[in-house]
Length: 176
Image (cartoon, rainbow, N blue to C red; front, side):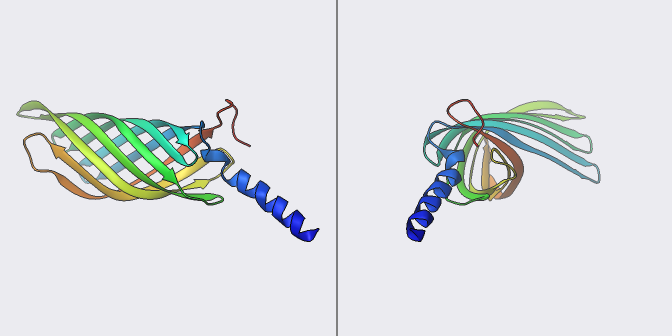
C-alpha cells in the first residue's frame, strides 16, 4: 500500500511540475534593463509572448526598444523577431535553452547629423525560470549574442538578461 501511495503521489507531483509548459499554454513577459555610467545611459525594454507547440517547447515573438546615450551621441533602436525555447524538468527552478533571431533598425544622432542603419542578430544560450508563484517566474538568461550591421563586420559576445514571465494555461485560466 505504501508503494502505491508513493507512486500516485509522485505521478501527481510530476503533473504539477510540467503544468506551466504544457502544449497549448501561453507565456507573456519580457525584460527591462537600465545601465548608467559616466556620460553613458542605456535603457531597453523587450516584451515577448510565446505559445507552447509541444510540452516544454515554445515558439514566440519579441519586440524591443533601446535608447543609448554616450556623451553627444544618441542611438534609438527598434527590433522584432522570433525566439524558441525548450524547458527541462525542474520544480521551482526550470532550466531552458533559447535561440533568438532579431531584425533591428537603429537611428544614430550626433552633433554632425543622423543616420539610420539596419542589423540582424542572433542569440543562443540558456537560462533558468525561477517560479515565485505557480504562474510567475523570474528569469536569468545568459549566452552568446552576435549582431551584423549592414556593410560592417559582425560583432558578438557575452549577453545576460533578467526578466519575468507569466504562464497562462490553454483553458484561459492561470495554471494552479
